[in-house]
Length: 326
Ligand SMILES: NC(=O)c1ccc[n+]([C@@H]2O[C@H](COP(=O)([O-])OP(=O)(O)OC[C@H]3O[C@@H](n4cnc5c(N)ncnc54)[C@H](O)[C@@H]3O)[C@@H](O)[C@H]2O)c1
Image (cartoon, rainbow, N blue to C red):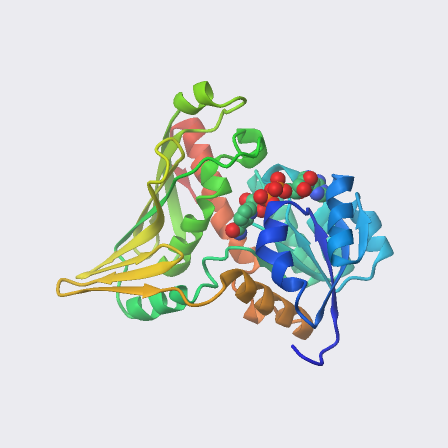
């Protein structure tokens, strides 16, 4: 936004996603000042401050006490969400959190309550929502009943040690497949009412050090509008598929983040995504911070907490073998 007052932005967690999904473009935006970087790794924080300007910290509270920020991004691994969001909410500044919200439902509920209490603008990086094809998908399915959705995140094996450990990542349905669970529930609408999940283990534990997450998980989620979701995730059969098929009467709409495929009995149409979803979600968030109005963000914290609750219920069902009512 040319000519506008610069918004002072801080980052908590300056690893992979902070750099490749946000800092690249934020550092070029005229109305943004990258003012502070905090990471438990002094080296990571220092490198970012050197590259983008601003000050480096290893503690969130010290960062917030030292620099008067307009908004802060939290880009830490799932297990590392402790008090950062609470401290940010207390300051009354904007909060952007990378998914997933945490490894427990209780933590997300606590943060959601703080966001509401302090009335801050809070957004979550469910970036499938800010793709142009999500808008197109909604238009193509408008006024029609979604009967079922099949959501897949079956593919590669991220190298991070925290990712393969259940206590640190919350498992793959929480860590990555949460994107497809979220876009499925976002477009299905209604409220999820029950969850059942089953999983397979044994291959990853032999193959990779410290690997204790499921190799594959398949979950069924029912909705109060009659729709049913089948969500599957795994990383043993690599390179299989990531996306969601929405099944309607004589219509299948497939959203795979990069492309929308619309199939009717007569024809198949492929629509490429046209926008930069990370830039789009960041622009919407910063405009909302400027206006102090959360309306324009693609996914509020409260909305993300609903998806998170489903992913946590999937984990509970995996542990208990029972259906979980929501
Ligand atoms: N939306 C997306 O497309 C997308 C893509 C990749 C990752 N992510 C999410 O972003 C999060 C981070 O992933 P990543 O790939 O950047 O991980 P990463 O391991 O590359 O980086 C995480 C950074 O956080 C730091 N950190 C850990 N604990 C911290 C704490 N308590 N305080 C401050 N810093 C701390 C680490 O030192 C590291 O620099 C994950 O939850 C992941 O799921 C989202």
